[in-house]
Each structure stands twice: as structure tokens, then as C-alpha cells.
Length: 357
Image 1 (cartoon, rainbow, N blue to C red):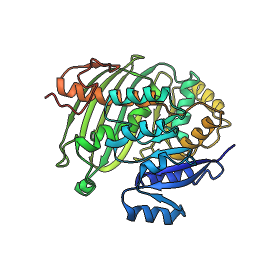
Image 2 (tube, rainbow, N blue to C red):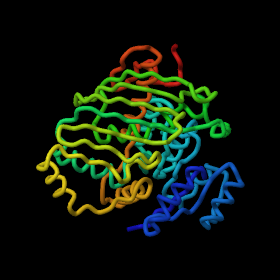
Image 3 (cartoon, one colour):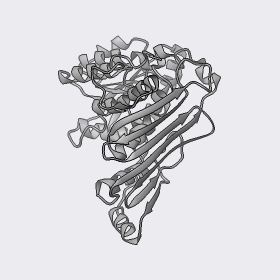
């Protein structure tokens, strides 16, 4: 099993990738380089983790044949160009959310992947942890039964200090608000467990902060399997929680309320009766603990690169997540229900930021 060399680009969230994703796996990854335009932060992170190679040049990393993986943790508006360039340079690529700012952009990335030597793995770290993976195991085993209804809540708090970072809160650079930057992970968790979305009616508003993008949103979803789901998001909650409550024929699941790691335990797994509970107990009898967030996603990525498992998250997964974002924006602007998938004839296919109010 070979050790893969990684260059982390963007040392803000990139530091979390190092701490949670790479340091726990010294037999799998080595962070060989870091890149950031902020030389003070570059020095701090480099010194903290004893990373000798430090650069402000993304292009230098692309030209370095000793780098296997480019891990992109930069502001959202430059993800598209960096992902395409890294794929073109023959690198494997990891990219933080949002992958890009339009479905057209995702489709451009998918096209670039077809001829690339490397692969792209978007980050959806909230899929990992004992709670969500036990729920997925129960659903996949057919124990949960018919899906009925769900609710997903992203109740976080962001005050003006958060938006002092120049690229935040702006359509041009953050690409969106609570739907894109904050709730995207919880909504991905929903579809990961309850399947794809069919129809969307949504509303967005800016009520908490003096910013361009939305900081409150609601949506009503009809899933392809017939289940009904409500989404609600705000950046004005005085208690921060992330919560999924999903009702199936035989089981109700409720996530932990941990805002930034809702996939970890404790989850409520409420069986309809003793027979169902016995089936769940038997299924999970030999359960092995699953580390949350980046730790497990990076572990699965290395397994894929070693030919030992599937790619844990794909660009198609990112497309589905961003289709939901696009549909909510489109519905809010038009006042009409939107049917997925988002195709090239959608008014927001090329850019969901184009407001049509």
C-alpha cells in the first residue's frame, strides 16, 4: 500500500484536512507541500506540522511530478479553474464544497475527468461517522422499509465578524449563502439516506446579516420514492444545531445535533417494534467504530486509489447536491415548483447567481 503525497492548497479549512484527514493516516498520506497566498498563515501551518515545502504558486504544484494529490481548499469562486487545471496536470484532486458555482461548471469538470489521468473526489465529510453509517446500513439492508417523511434543519449562527473575510457574503466570490456554504452537507446527508429529489419548491431570504447572499432558506421536497421532506436553514440561530429526522415504515432516525459533525453518534434509531429491533441488533452486532468526517473520507479515498474499493464521493454526487441548490434558487425567483434534474435548458444552468426577481 503506497503512501500518497499531497499538496494542500488553502490553509484555512486545509488545516482541518491535515489534522483530521492526513495525520491519522501516516501509512497512507504525506503532506509534502502547502500553498496559500497569506504568507503568515503559510508559515504558521508549515511550522505547526513541519511541512518544509511552502509556496504561494498553485502552478508550481501542478508542475511538480512528486505530488500525487492536489487538495483544493480555496475560496469557492476559483475552484472550477483549479480543479480543471489540476486534472489537466495529471493529478488526483480533492476539492472542498461547493465544487463550483453552476451545473454547467460541474458538467465541465465531469467532461475534464473523462480524459484525465487522475480522479476527482469532492468533499462531503458529513457522510461519515457511526450514526449516519449505521442508518445507511439499516436502510440498505431493507429493514427501514418505505420512506415516509423527513426534516432537515441547519440552524447556525454567523455574525458580522464572520463576513469580515473579504470573499464571504458576496455572490461573485462565495457563490451563495446558507444553501451553498453551510447547509449543503446536511442536504447531501438527506439524499445519501433517502434517495434522489424529484421536485422542489423553495424560498430564500437575507434577514440576519447585511450581505448579498441568502442567510435564511426553506424548501419543500418530493423525493423520487414519494417521500416528503422539509428543509429549513438560518444563520441566525442562537443555538447552533444540525438535525435530520427521517421517518420510514419500520424505523425513525434522528441525527445527533452536533452542528459540524452530525454524522457521528449519538443517533436515535427508533424501531417500530421488537421484531424490527431484533433485526437491527443482529445487523449491527459486529459494528466497528467509524471515525467521523475527513478521517474516514480520506481513508476510503486511499482505498480507492489502491484498487480496494469504490470512489467514496464523485463529481456526480456533487452535481446532485448543486442541482438542489439551483432548484431552490430557481423556485424562489420564479415562485414555481422545479423538477429535477437541472438540464442545459434551465434558466439557471449556466449560473444560479443570475437573479430573476
